[in-house]
Length: 178
Image (cartoon, rainbow, N blue to C red; front, top):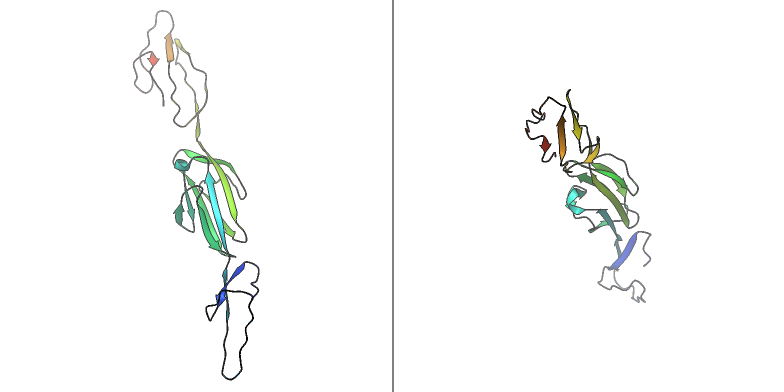
């Protein structure tokens, strides 16, 4: 019994598991013998750089990063990679877009593996003084989600005093900005 591409021989209807065999019978009664085949199992594996940063689903079922999940030949699979809040996908193997969540369909014709990098969102932080003072120990820039900015100081001009920050902090040296 020779399987078509993407299939494996699973046995004969009489229970024999040998694909090649000599079969001799006498035609004195009806004989039915069936060669059985099934889809060859292929795997899909989806990896993210840090498992806690994304949820991965194959056909709506959550799987862990790096798990190999079996599907049959020509089966259609929907792959979804959803980063946690304040994170996004920056690159990955084909198919890749910067959509969040990443969602695509594949037809399983071979073992498939996809790799994605999840990083924190970035935010532009600008700190300014409104008249009669300046800011020390800080340069405007982009910061990743969760970064803590410390030691920013409001410096009052001569004959002025610091009143407060816009977040109601009253210390001239802000302890931390998140």
